[in-house]
Image (cartoon, rainbow, N blue to C red):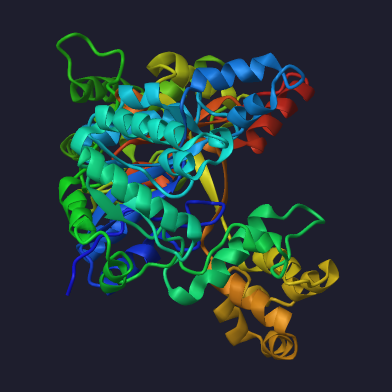
Length: 606
């Protein structure tokens, strides 16, 4: 049986057209008996944590990568934008609006850090319509990366096919451009540059395979084959079609599933094919399958998701020879005397035990940082809540002033919050006056540096009711019809997958039997359930890293703010310090009420 590795693949983290969850993709790879695969979503790294975790569970190797958007010179894009549409030529407009797909894979840990830095730059300073990189930026971050010539939208294929700015070139000019591009890649990546061949029955791909053979022979470049997988099974083309229709629909103007536009962004052959099928598709490249295995063997970069590994910033006010735990004990001793002027042995033993657990688990910096943030808010007159959740069971949080609830008096258990038997990050949720929460974020930026603090991304997912409303319209159901369908979802399964809803509701099953459009809508809602639909900025969560953010995670920009490309739960899995700065309207109301009531005595003790 031949061996093969899929190295160019998209998951639902490719929000526009990916129609397989990272976990489902990994499962399909395992079912086919393959030993690993790469994730290369469009311009982002969103799917990395889920994919790595799924691969680890299946004992297969994850290769972390992306399909970036490449321009030859990002500065040229800036110049053309500044020139203005009235002064630009048609050819300049073409340059401004064209980017090329570029598959990049993290070969080493240095390569992973380079890829995170590269994609963070692309999604920030480099962004224009898409997160853009150019050859100058690639050269800065090429170490530890593997690059391929990518799909038909790659630079080399676009030159070969005479598309865009390369239209009208003579055969000799085309050859010169192809050689120049290949030589640039070889200069940047050496033996870690591969030519990539596809075969989906598209005529342009046949032309490209001939060009790949020519360049491979001329420069002795190894060839890999790929299928540009966007969904798991051969019968799932319809699902990708649904996803792209949803992505191109506008309010009041859905892209119908049977329209010509619906065929633009999907293809019937983009599923995860078996090794034998991939080998048989490319008889002209007998070594390509083995080359994919060599790439897999080269790539050992990983996100640090091992249990018990943490990357906390150092508390900034430590004395030169002082450790974080020594400082924590000193701060707790001061607070202990204030909170417990007449302590019992039970109080002292409780304090010793909690400090021992916190120190052993390596969380001393965490408690100091959170306490410092809370004390800043109180100094500035920002109302702070008394504490919520399991953190209220800690005497340490109480004596540090993070919470205002005596865990001994109220018989609250520290072990519910933190214990050695369960190696998890402490989770302290803190409420602040919602009008002044941004002041707390600003304090974190000032204290730790803007290159080390970011708000976190939030992924919205397809849910049953919303997907019924959206998908129904692409199957030509009227807005009133999809609204009625959604309203008939029983309350007790309103957040469940569509298959569970149908088990519960005979009425909806009957409607599906009577109307094919309804049946297709329900089928789409069931398959899309849990896939990412769009992103936003989490209003409360921030991450603080010990050094530059992009040494630990990829970032992007949202309305001028730096946010992470991994969500809060994933940041904790990576051992990073996530802080929840919750805004509570009730605290604002208390402050307003105090201002209204003459001579009001403040009984609130937060």
